[in-house]
Length: 436
View 1 (spheres, one colour):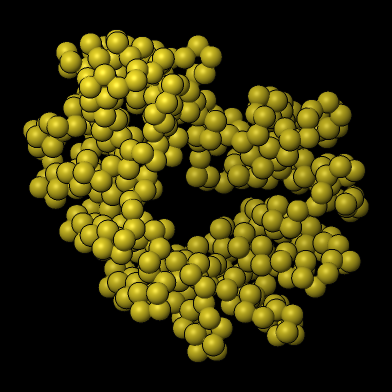
View 2 (cartoon, one colour; view 1 turned 45 degrees about the horizontal axis):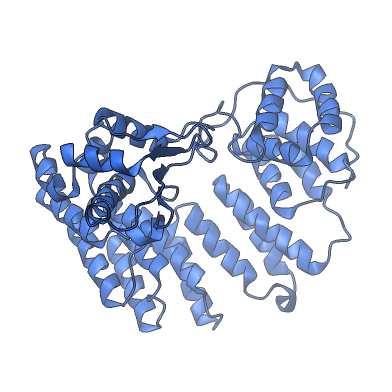
C-alpha cells in the first residue's frame, strides 16, 4: 500500500530526543531475528537526516523481512518517531508488506503524542477507502486502544463519537467495549465502571474481559472496596471462577503488601477448586519485599530453613506467612521435566518466584537422588538468555540464578551450547547439596 506524500511531509526537524518509554531507550531490539535488527537500528541512529532514506533503501534490499518488521516495531515501542515514520513509509512501498491496522493505529497515536499532527492526520487520511465496514470498524477500535496507551483522552473520545455516529447495526456494542477498555488503560476506573453499568443497562452483556479490565483498573488505582464489590458481583454471575481473575486480585493486594488479603484470596482460589499456577506464584511473591532482597543477595537457603532465615533479615510476620504458603503450594510440576534429563524451566517466573521454585526444586532433586530413582544423564536449570528482556541478552533471572549458584559453589555451569541454561552432573549435585 503506497502512500504518496506531500512534498513538505517529511520536512520535520530531526531530533534525537524521544518520549519516555517503559524500557531502556537505547537497548537493542528484544523481538525478532535481532542481530540484524539491532545493527539496522544502530545504523539509522548514526545516520544524518539526509541519509536515513538511503540507509532504508539499502536495508530493504539486503535484510530479511522479519528483521525489518522487528526493527520498525522496536522503534515504535521506543517512541522514536523520527526513525519509525520514514521506516514505516518505506515498508508501505514494499510489495511484500501487508498493511496492518494495529501498526498503522499505533504509529498515528505515536505521532499525535509527539505533536506531529500533520503527519498523523495524513496517515489517517491515507487509510484505504476500499476497506470494508468491518475492517474500518476494526481499525478505529485499534485507534482507540492506541490513543489510550498514550493517554490521549480527547482523541479517544473523538474516535468513539465517530463510531457512535455509524449505524448501530454495523457497530453493535464494540464502541462501548473499546471505550471501557480505553478508560481502564488510562487509569480512569470510575469512567470504565460507568461504561460497564451502561452496557448492563442496555442489555449488552459485558464479557469476562470487560469485567477484568474494570477490576484491574480499580485495583491499580487502590480502589479496593469498589474492586471487592465488583468481584462479588462477578461471583454472583459465575464469572469469578477463573484463575486469571484470582491472579489479578492477588497481584493487586500483593503490590499493596496487604498480606491478609493475599491470603484471603488465595484461600478463595483453593476453595473454588482451582490449582495455583506459576502466575499465581508470581503474584503472591510480590507481597514479600524481603524475598527480592534475599534473591539479589547471592544467598541460597534450603527450603526447610528459608522462613527462619528471612526472619533474621527482618521479614514481617505477614511476609513469613506468605513464604510458607509459597513453599507449600509451589507448582513445581508445571515447570519441571523428569526424564532422561531433569530440568527446571524458569522462563515464566519473576525474581521472587524463581528463588522459591529453585529452593523447592533442589529439595525434590535431592529426595529423588537419595532414594536412588532412575538417575538422569544431567540436571539443568533453564533461565533464558534475555531474548525478551528490556535489554536484549541481559536476563535478570539468569543473572540472579547464576550468581546465586556460584556463591554457594554449586556444580552448575553455563551450557556451552545454550547460554540460557546451566548444567550439572547428578552425582556432583548430590555431593554439593549435602554439604550446604
